[in-house]
Length: 195
Image: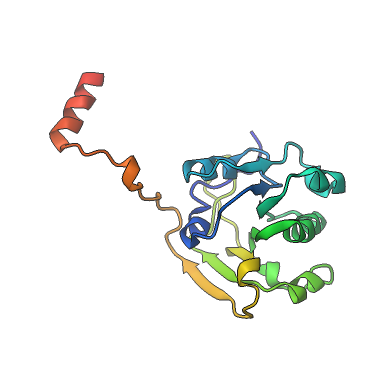
């Protein structure tokens, strides 16, 4: 087990925006935590990296089939974040979605050009702070995290929609096709019959 894990329901704020469609590339999702959440949400066309070094390999990016979105958790990536931002945005048809600390917006020398050239279409600030530790210690990051969404389809607008998702850990509602009409008596009866 790695020290870090993808928090459950972390994709809810992105899914709530209803912007995802098509093929999705997950360059940092080695444990496939994001992939499982996408599958649960009904997405089945995505590509996951199989090695931590894939995203810093230019030939890996060039070998990918055409894709619509790049989604990555970039917290703690340091210098290699540039290998997500530039190709993740440039090679995608629809855009780039990054989960990082709010300090991502600080224009460091390396990130300055990216932040100046790209329009941030959505910023979704998360509360409570996500727990990334896999050791169950319930330690939260000391800095607020947010989803940074660079949607090419809305890049003509220079405005950024800022949302606060105060209850992002909630389960997603069932779709109508997932609901089955049962009475509470049927549910109790089925549960007793299975025991």
